[in-house]
Length: 464
Image (cartoon, rainbow, N blue to C red; front, side, top):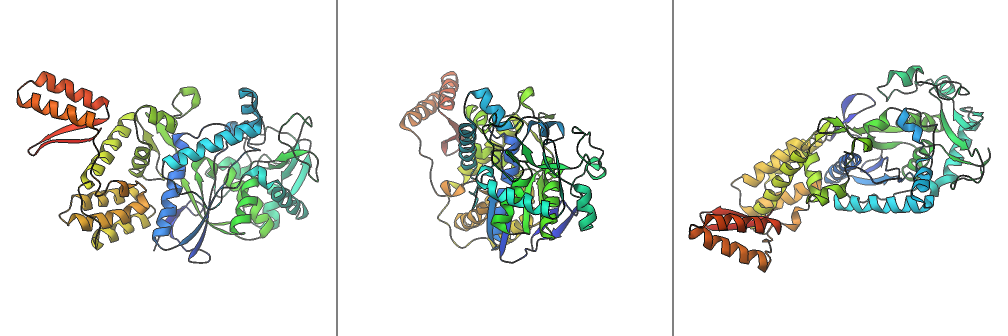
């Protein structure tokens, strides 16, 4: 039985889908105004591990990740997502491009990084701009139910009306007392309650925005929160089995999704909420202004395989803050390279080691305990079982870990002739006692991406 921590109930629960073996799973995707950072990708790696674990348990998962290409305002960074400039409109002005070019460019960049990290592609990746009709229809239903009101800049969701009409409390998912009590700093004096949020925003000056649509309330654009309710319910139904995202979304975006969705349907919106914790960089918060909002591209420029980031995140609990350092990434690269080297001379997969496979599944089924799962994997690799049995079990484990180990098991490293020549020269120099030349050749080999390890059986070459 899979167990997952539910951030709504604050406890680990047995995972029971609404209609087994089918599972509907939604994860909030990127706002495509800039490149996704390695912090963003911790969230997607967590979702990917969850997806793979569900599949390993025999579930049929319909996985949806949205693309936010309109409506996410800069005020979100200040604690009020209903104020400020549209992040994509702002990026378009800054880069001298159309909003459509901006959204398309950064969506494609996100998908490339998604592939580099070996993340399974969702069944659907809906864009907010392709679902304006669905968002308008949802706002109309909320309006018909008496959950909205109109002010100067848009149509707003009435959180007090929600509590009175449904008997439910707004903001239970959040850990911010302000959102529950309405003590958030009020930026718009026209709002009935500081907790209320925009469903549809009016264009201040029609034609000034590149993205705006006609609606029953006038020319404008959807609020940020409404898109996820509209798209998730379109593709997964009125009740989702799992909804994931980063810890930041737990505070206002996800509570707003719950309120507007449950106001319309009268049903539980999500059965299991799964949130990944923040990351720090060298013990500090990550931020563009601090110059430490690293991208996958930054890792590659420093010579790291993107899969090393995946391995690194597997070493931590997804619900705990993770401190990223370049030293920890280098340690992860060494560990992954050692693993790859160890399995290269294994025999073809056969039978398997049931004991290790069972323990591994027990670990990942226990609220995605990837640190324990990795430890069990290493026990298997270093065990005395025949390599063919270890290979079979390791491949099964890797269907969850996603480290592409099938590309290394039983596949000797191909060493370029140039590198092999330097290795031979170095060995001759070492045997002749010319250690100065030997060290020089070692550095030349390292520059070409390989390392030499001296063993009783002679030099062993591996990837650096």
